[in-house]
Image 1 (tube, rainbow, N blue to C red):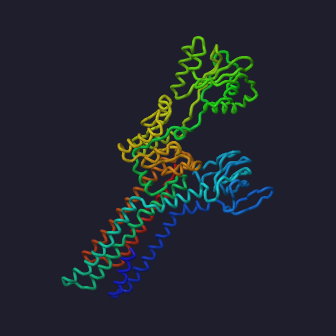
Image 2: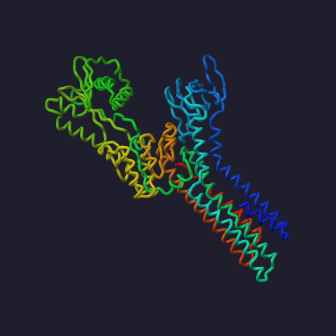
Image 3: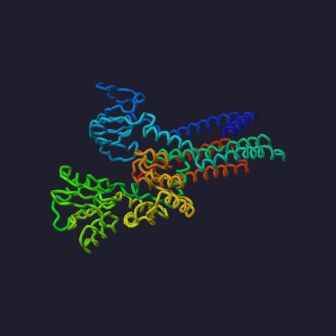
Length: 563
């Protein structure tokens, strides 16, 4: 760019066109200044991220409270955060309750309730109560520091279209110089005026400047990645931004992605002769259990304010793989799988009982039975709940033209079918080991070329890595998600996925428009050489105008909103 400009200005001086030469220099400087301004505007979202976290924190050490620089805070310090203050460091709440606005990190607009043992992030705003927070990370390791670092890296990384433009410009500059030389020298050899055609040759050099072309991709990439970061989506590079725009199939992990990832009691069905205290007794028995579903029953009992800890249990025992038993008020009670009751009841489970159990199982629920060796007293159904917005997200993706949405899970096929139907994915694959998920992603890539995998970033790491674009849920909570994925949805909110697809497609479209326009305007200007109408003025305006239009077009990416 600068080579072509320099030759043009020296040439203008050489043939006595001082005014024209000076104009070229001034207009080029204005063009450069405008370009810098627009790039700065595009990078503003990162600058605003950098200013988010406070530089000082109120720390209590021993009996002393002191305001110190965040660089001096060490892991284990107790940080005091007053209402209306920003949290300076990542940590765990050790005292107090409050609502914290996490929009800066996760893009969530609704404040999140925080109590003891909850995690808080640097740069978020404490809205209501006084919090005491135990610092868990040094200033350079906080989530916000990682986001800034990753986004800066992403914006600096070359996208495929940018690599194409750079390669193109490498060959383009010498070609333009040859054309300009030809324009300046060939006509005078056939008797035309030297001054006129040297001037035309210099104008070709100026119009040939690939400013707009060179700017066309980076401004778009920087703007889009900055906008995404502001909305709680971390895109790790221009390459992933572009690839996300051409995805045809998206695979989802089930647990923790389409579902909430923790079991809840969905049905409690007392049978004949069940006492009012039965659920309290079931919770008391489950309190001694190691079974993963026990937590769902204990949570429900706490919600109902049942005093299950004071129930007196004797002869408690675990029946491996089947359930538990214990004696309460002289009666032995059992809680376990339907198979356990098939064995201990004299006549097994009644036909009606079996039908009721099967109905619940067909809804994708796990059924636990409670009773004695004579009778079934209650059925408790537990399930991993589907996220509220999962179905809407899948519908939106289909409306955006994503052909295939596939749910991958290690769960049994009955549960998988129930949840798959509920969220309306096109395909369901169940009973998969991590290795199977990986192989399935490879097969999908062969079929669709571009495939995205959405998971929670822990057990899905191999599948995330194998997909064209790996999207991890909840980047704010887990380092694994930030490390393994190409894109991280910081808020653990699946609703950000359609926004990411839309933004990527818009970025792709704008990059293509910019490249086409940049090359097109050069060709039109070069054609003006034939009738001899091309002046240095027109040349510089064509170049500067194209650069400005390309930049303004890229800045439209700031207007893509997350609806």
